[in-house]
Each structure stands twice: as structure tokens, then as C-alpha cells.
Image 1 (spheres, rainbow, N blue to C red):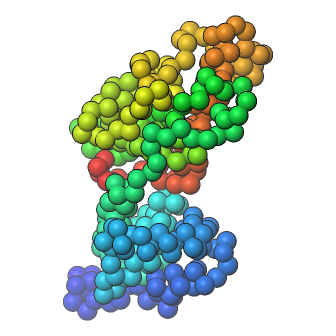
Image 2: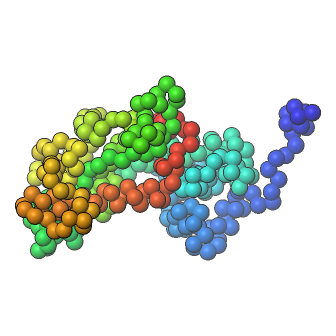
Length: 294
């Protein structure tokens, strides 16, 4: 009887009157906060994002789902860490359609990320660096900061040992570069959680990865886990560095601690970027069983 109900009589499962297309239109026509709370984007940003995916990502409508609805399903999954079954019920589609559109939008977003060029190798005018501030002129040629972060991942049993990070969770080590406008200019993912930052960094510098290397006197700020070499400025080792150390232990003493304090104050921009990113996309903290490549 179960076989007949599922494969012969084909009793409809998704029977709600509010189908996915109508739900998307209702959200877009409703209050501004509703779009932001569901899709984590304002209306104009969401519509511009869909148009850009059409033009650059080659995303197009199909018989059952339009681009706006497919992007809405994708954003709800990554912004609220929803399972495909919950999204299928909300948008009244089968699991196959939800999974297909998740992959399609993900490929379009990846293509978009490779196409759009964020300004690189330019000294950013920043209130902490320009003018007569205490950071000028010592960090005048600084163009950004580099650091790694651990992102939740899923791996098959045979590879879980190498993907277990410092907190015994399955993670991958992601290297990122950002400027002082809190824009990511380079992201290098895929390394297992046990890999240290220096190893990932040296691999990212290979020509095949198109790393935005500094030009001339320009340089990036890195922490003590990275090599201190030309173009990449690390702090003094075995000296107080993190801002919380100075809050607990008082003002910096000596020129090395003073340098580390100002270095940490500037490099903190990438920590803020990671914090904003993981707060906006909770899926990065608890990844479903997607392959590592995805």
C-alpha cells in the first residue's frame, strides 16, 4: 500500500496554497525588515544580486522555479542553516528541486566571485592610518590584513582525523585577506583543520592561486603564526600582543610592546570581518553533510 501510494497513485505531498513563488513575492512586497530577516539582504540588494547572477552567473528561470525563488531558497539555507526538508516545505517543492537549485545558485555565486575584482594592491585611506594619527607614517603603506579561520566542515570517516581542528571539531582552515574597508580581497579554502596557518599561506602564494601580492613598499599585517618576510609584517614574538593582554596588564611598556599594540589594533579588522561573516551565515559554524568541495 505504501508503494502504491508513493509511486502509483502519487498522492500530492506539498499541498499548501502559499507556494514558493507567491511566498517570495509576498516577502518582497512586504515590510523592508521582513526581507532582511529572511534573506539577510535588503530588497534592493536582493534584486540587484539576482540580476547580477543572471548576467554574470548565467542563472536563468526554469519551468517550475524562477531565479528570485531559487536565490531565496539558497539564502535561507545558508543564512539560517535550514535543512533542505524545511525549505522544501516552506517553498512547496520536492527535495530534488531544492537540492538542484542550491547547487545551481552556489555555482553561479562562485563564478561571480571569480569575475568581480575587488580593488587590490591599493593603500586604503582609513582614519586609523591617514593624517597625523599615531599610526602614520609607520603603517602608511599597509593595504590589509591576513589571517586564517576555522570553518565547520563535513568529511567522510576515512578523512575525519585530518579535518579535526584544535577543538576536536571537523573543520577546514580557510585563509582570507581583507582591506580596511572590511572587504575580502582573497579567500583560499579547502585545507583540513589540522593544517597550520603558515603552511596554508605558503601554498596560497603559488602563482596558480592568483594571490594579490603587495607591490613595492606595500605590505600586509600578519600574526605570529605566519612568516615575517618582505611584504608581510608580523609582530614581535614572546611579547604582549593581543589587545586583551593590554587591557588586563595596563599600557604598553617599551618600543616592542608599543609596536605590537598598534599592530594588533590594525590587524583586528580581519577578526571583525570573520565575526560579521559567521554571524551573518550560521551555516559556517555547523555545516551539514555537504562534501568539502561544496
